[in-house]
Image 1 (cartoon, rainbow, N blue to C red):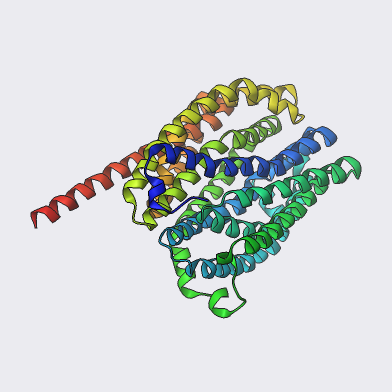
Image 2: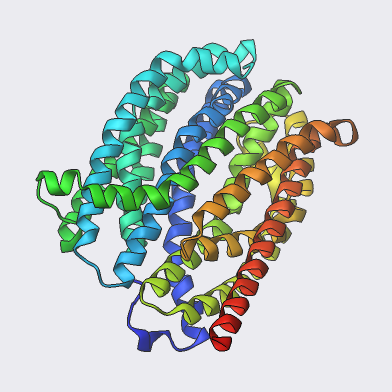
Length: 454
């Protein structure tokens, strides 16, 4: 657990160790979570072929839309939990957890039902290729069934991260990944249920993950237990506090997901080979970036706890130490992904042309990993201090840069514009966060000068 004892926070070495201890289970959780899609894609690609692999890839942006809405809001919740934990306001934590568990369950049951009926329309909107359309629709309808369970898991995971426990979500993901892989083999390779079997395996694994996390958390932590009373299940104060921190990143995530639908439509115009190559490459890329993303989660949580405890100077140390660690991690990832990327794409069953496209994609995108790492470090610090509105607005602006660059530079880069446009958006994001840090420093200096003169 991330400690709130101020005596434990005295040295930069302790910050390094705490960041590693907190971030490592998150990284492992992320790797295992990606096994949902990896197992689906790997088994389907090798058993049913490249068209089936492309069908699953065609659903990625639609599924990610809902996932980003959930994770965007629960990012704000995690900050709120950390602030309350850091300030020792333990009574607020079960009220926040109970209220948002109920609200999220209701909302995503409705999303699940509507998504099942809208799946074909969404795929047509994305210009999904004809040869993959029916399989993609079958896959998507089944995946929607698991949304409420995924929502509950993320609310509990946010609470656990906020109180400093990143290990319990890892155990839930470990169980879920094992269930997913075993059921993938049974449903796809043995029973020959094709992409529908892969989707069913994912849903069953999400149910197992959510049930385990709820029961284990309630047993382990008294502050994560709550009675089934109205003041807990629908606490107005908790809902308003959570909305204040959760809505900005949720809006940003929703806009980003909608932008990704536009980019998916743009990518589909390059044909099935490019769609298969790039969507498969993004599966590898999503694993490669996990150390950066989850180290950022560690920076955000530790900063939020520090600010909740009134230790703002500690928060600045966390930013400095975390940024150095982030730079080292990003450079290591860049050196590792270029030679390994094409082999990983081939392992999914992609053909030679798709593998070649994927190799070029990794060479183009990985050169921007350092930029992305530093941007993530600054973003995490700002969000930990509660500055979620600016962070979210910056994310939306960087998306606009990415979409604009995709269409503006396609004649120069061809299908590799997908990689370069994302790299350009990371540069824009870093610039916006640096500007915010400089601006806040100037505001602080002006405030100090004003107090001294008065």
